[in-house]
Image (cartoon, helix red, strand yellow):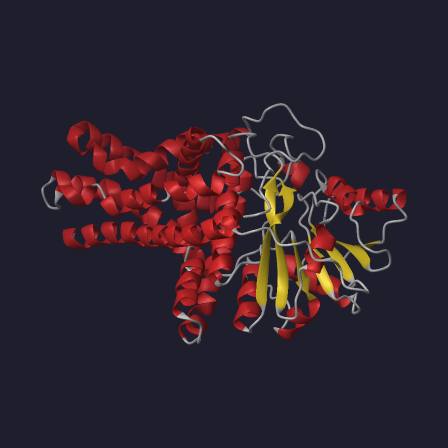
Length: 500
């Protein structure tokens, strides 16, 4: 039994090492992409393709007018684009949309109300697309994004016969508002600066991120349309498109700023949906990946992308096992070196140059970049068990409803449930996490007091407990460390170079 505990503990650390190795491999390609010479801006074809701009909404009163204001400023040939507000709201958001449309009659806006949420976001996108059969491309913007005026022109101009998606980068409206936005912006910077750029440079599969991108309508129809049986319908579509021979093109110079979740509740909901949805897709595409004729490098990167959520499940397992391992080390049943879990230490240390690279365009100071990475690790530790449970739920294939991320308006503090109609985390999940937290905390206390020399073996659990104590209580209290509110859209932290 002790042998199995030790093997499971170390195996979880090795799983994290695999993720780090993949990230370091992408680092080489991302560096090459950043050194690449800037390509000339292509022009729009004539006549310009017809584009429908879809704005999927569900109870977004805090941000909907800002979204519409930005969309109204889009520069695209008149008569060649329309806007669809796909509004499934159950609060007063529809009234705000109707009032905005009445004030801006010159903007080609259609307010689409389904009366239900069948299929959630994927269902809304499908229903809207059916109303515009003449559309060549569809641009998708989530409610908290502030699109630049040249977004449509630049995206549409980058299409080619084999390109299904042109994806822009996400910027940040509130990257330094509090510890949660710091962690969230670090995570997003790593995805776009390193993963998207590195995968494109290496010829591997990329992800359509569900927003801030434009998709070929013909490509969507060619692979069977949107599917609503996963929480990450964007990732599902990305894989189906690329397995069918289409390309996803990423342009880091097209930056669309968005709101970073500023509260524990918002971050937990967002993380749960992403982790569970990607895990659902890993379950779905395993057999297709194994039987594909893709080159080995592409398959390896794709495997790492599809099973990336396994890293979070592994870290959660280490957190739960570390007190037990420390106890058995103290009893002499497990070798002392096992308790330190050197593979996990190496995994975290190996990620440091990765995050220093991905943060460099936005955070010039090396010291501050290291500090931002440590802050990111602290928040990630507090979510370790929460994310692990989401991944396991996705792997087991249990159905789940789509829960939107609450939004407050960048810099506006933490939204209340009445303002967002967002659901709090499920009581059963919070109760289970509370029980696990008590057990882990008590075990650390007992083992640490009785055998002080073993406290080093508890470092993963110590990180999780510290993060939980520092972060999660603010959810119940509705507190935020936000600075004074900033009104209107900003472009803070958007100095992403166009040559990367």
